[in-house]
Length: 165
Image (cartoon, rainbow, N blue to C red; front, side):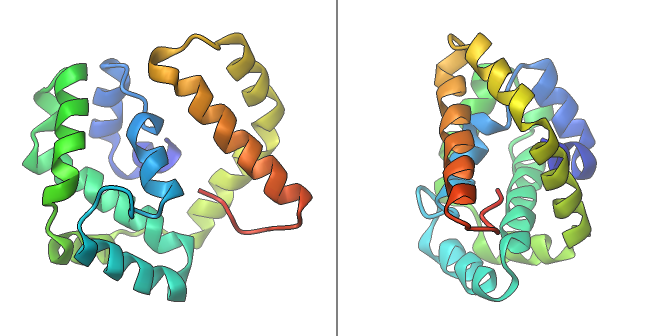
């Protein structure tokens, strides 16, 4: 959420107004590093870069995909249902060359990622309480959040350090 609000503020505000939570679609992108629904040429390019640069390229790609969807899909003029439908359909039609070129122009720095990861770490306990209180949220969103929270907690216990999406 923080990265989208910083780099794509108009889109972020519109999604918030339409009650479209970024995690409704981005969680799957990040957890699978785009292998779930994107074309192979994009996936291969992201993974090549990911092996060299780490998570930064994954976040830049996510931002680039959203930027492309914002302009190509005219997301700022769509409602809740139209946004989710468009995001589901556009995944198979993205232009890998365009997305990767755009992603490398993103001014995302490792310090941004570290700052937001630290903020998340400090707020984890309250996030878990909030998730438990809102167990009946839209489309099983709390289930996704719980899964990500448990995944991060279990990796920390195992000593895995840089899992952070």
